[in-house]
Amino acid sequence: MAVKCSRCSGNAVIYLPYGNENLCRKHFVESYERRVMRAVREFRMIKKGDRIGAAVSGGKDSLSMLHILKKICDSMRVELVALSVDEGIKGYREKTLKVARENCKKLEVEHRVLSFKKEIGVTVDEISKKKERMRTCSYCGVFRRWILNKAAREMELNKLAVGHNLDDTAQSILMNFLRNEPFRLARLGPAGGIIEDEFFVDRIKPLMMIPERESAVYSIIKGMNVEFGRCPYAHEAFRSRVRVFLNELEEEFPGTKFRVVNSFMSLKNSIEKQFRTNEKPVKCRECGELSSQEICMRCKMLKELTV
Ligand code: SF4
Image 1 (cartoon, rainbow, N blue to C red):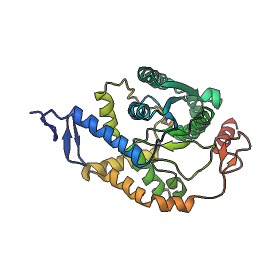
Image 2: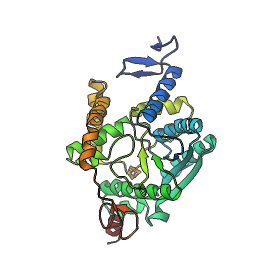
Image 3: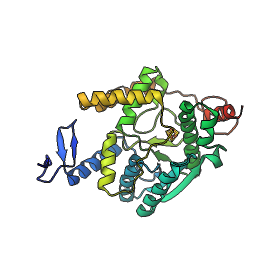
Image 4: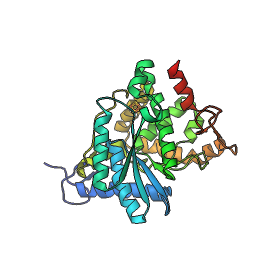
């Protein structure tokens, strides 16, 4: 017999173990959207006059985020632009970019594609041939952040929304603790951060309190065309171990990921205070972008690739 929704007589489509609730399509969509909107409001992610860039990869998280941001931005008359990055990953990125393009067209959101080859001069496929496969993600992450920040600033966007979900956030928190990297920990959080400079575009994370599998369900219910494939380089060993560990704990003790993130949030202000500095970040000597050192990470890594 079909399991019934805990809030009505409809058939349930999802079980939320942390709330011990079964929800039908209608009540799940309402609950999902309400929680995203609550996070946006609570952490003051969007205000009138903002110009928001949404980083859209074509996966379930970024597309679900884009659909809700479109509603929020329209109701607040805030400008929204979608930005996708083409890292040059053959057999994978073409599909996700196509999906991103189609969704933006349907939602009538302006869409820009930024390319590694054009902005950095090298693709991820080329990097993977020069460096060990395991390190590809480190290069990709640094280059992508650099490209997005530069493009957002040049387009006069003042905030960049990224689709990091609860699972990503809980993993990052734990990884930074386990690696003893409190400075990186201080940079996590739903909005803003420890870098205050008009050259740096603030990040916002509307899905930070949404479990990963719920965005998959939301995107299917809403009939979005989503690419569920995984990047062929997604092998970061340490993150994978932490992911499995957290998933096992979540299975046995529902709500674990929420508790990790909520514990971090209660410490966040003091961690931020400790690492907030009055020293202004400098401009990189090579590329002119913001950096904590004379030469930024992007330029150092680019040099590494040419030796
Ligand atoms: Fe880049 Fe790694 Fe993400 Fe693939 S998995 S897009 S290589 S960061």
